[in-house]
Image (spheres, rainbow, N blue to C red):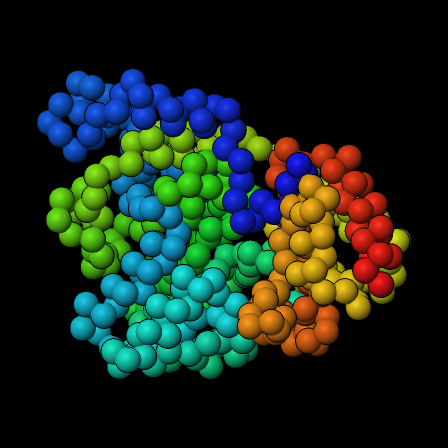
Length: 376
């Protein structure tokens, strides 16, 4: 099978699997007991925090609170506002993942003014529109670091500086799920105004079910899970030592990965796409993107149909649309970018990993050509 849907999830490396299994079998002990220092069950968390500190250049390992993943972390940030007693405006971008957008919209019933700020035709937040929303009553701004569909990278530095100038009391959260492990993330240079950042290990070849929230020193939000006191009281629940052991290795491997090579492979793929089909639409090509991501539309084709047909041929890709009650529902991201319905519903996404090969993308292009011919 050829797997080209790495923004959905990634395959754990052999070293990650080995580290995870060791804490499922040999060292399966509870990290919260008094004997953890003797059994070694406390080591994975320390290792994971140190590895994440290095990967994203955080101030200290204690900046990381580990959760089940970015969905939990995103929900935690948004729902914590309900308990702070500080009603105000919450600003999110129109292309946020559902784990940000849905809890944000839910805040309306609690009295918050929730605003979706738009993006331009390349899927980048419109700074002029965002600035209008950054009023003195703003309590939180949440803008994803990189889009999971188009790969478009947001101007986090510029957004952060604008927030500090316009509403300095507001928290700045970024869903960094797609960015961490795929591009340079530096919390002490470029991301200095980010207060909170969510991430998931399975997006950079770690195990599923483990991720976390970066919290800049001096920032506090209300805990979401109580009843155990783990994570220094920030997030109760038995420590996922196997997951943390795998996350630590994945973060170390990501820190030494060469994503420039992945970007060159993506660019070669897109060049061949355009040479083969001049009418193709490559979304967000005019802006900085994740080096592994290409979201494109072949006019006249249904993206969902093409993805299903490719899967039948042993090639797994993503799609920017979904079937709902017999109708094709286009990508919300492409809709926010103003992409026409017939182009949006034709969207296909490939997302490479550092293990993807030239032979795999050549096979994809050949198979796309055969399928486009047969489906016409």
